[in-house]
Image (cartoon, rainbow, N blue to C red; front, side, top):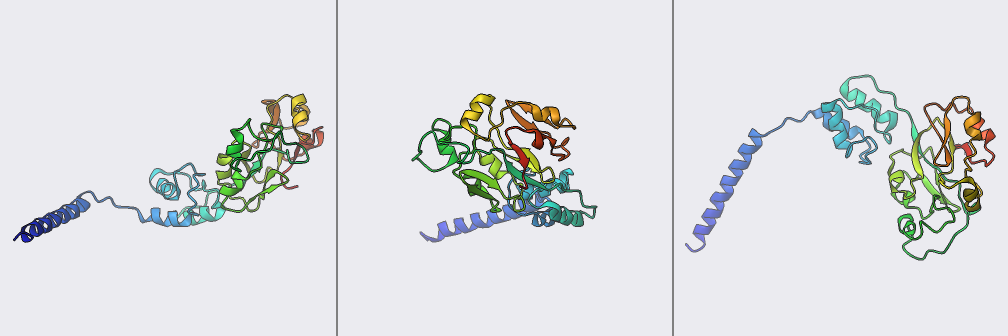
Length: 263
């Protein structure tokens, strides 16, 4: 009896709990649209957040239940958009191919180190010490934090500078989020001309820090026939929506800091 009564109490409690849970599951059951699961399976499952949602499952739910656009998955591209359209029974939305770009030309031939860093070999760690080891405080730190988070093997560190391999890039944006100097952004793949400098110093200081730096002379701005390039924060930047890839800014740049991402 010493063991029987506690065992019975435990058994009855367990049975009651099971009945209550079963009843609760019936009462509070929420029917899930099977399209959510099918759309989720059509996505890359990288959960990168490039679509603006917490992950692939959240994005799939938003498509079905909130009318979210079906072409927001950059890593999945046109293939994912086509699969989503098949699940929904709609026409596939246009997907503009995108890729990351590193807006810096400060490799080891153009800049020099201010000091040797023997701490944790990462860009974030080096950034904490006098804004990095390089002579330019706005340039690529070169330790490869971006490369470490890239799931597409699309980034290489060459001569101290991160380089994107466009045809491998999934445009997920994880490298951009990882770069402590904010040098990486996502561009339309078709807009292949860009400014490869992000220095916010004036032209004289920039040139002392990096041979390949933008001097903010505004010649590119004057030569652009579509008004797509402007000097802001002492360096040029391109408005992709206005850019026509004519190359006039590239030809005019005396610092040769504007060039094609394809070259």
